[in-house]
Image 1: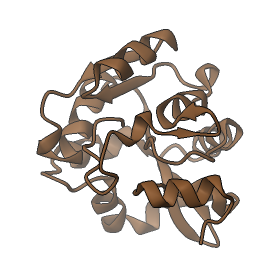
Image 2: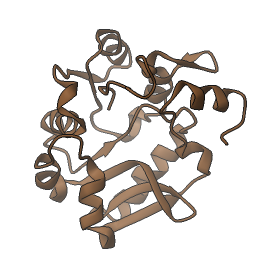
Image 3: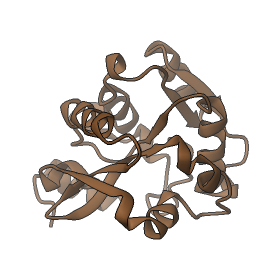
Image 4: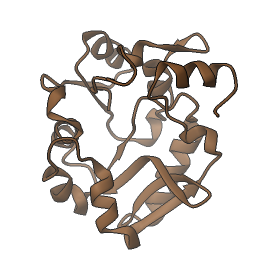
Length: 186
């Protein structure tokens, strides 16, 4: 998911650099291509569309990012509707590791009726992998309501893969990115 307006960041945060790479490049590199049958990148930005193609991922143009995250989810699910499950990965977790995403997919394969997510100290974070049985609920989401709303209704169906908390750290502001770059996630 790379379509948001990043209002709190003040500019296209996906182009912001962390350790000499853009946040979107770091996100695309965190996707273990060999684990997934298909990967779709939903974005409003032409430069991210081109980068997605360089990674051999489907690129879906979101002409209405102002409709909220639910619209991004719908666009992605429409592209991947024939899959047994869909992993939603946000693009502002610069320390997310490819190995953790692969382990999450492997955990889900052993319990494919569950929602699988990364977590730290028992607290859920992103990414989250939803089985197809939840697609109808995800498609019913409106405005800026995302998968969290579905997870809250089905907490008994959630399994977590414990990871280092740094992987779950997201950067919503330029200051947060700067603090992360300096090694202070304070």
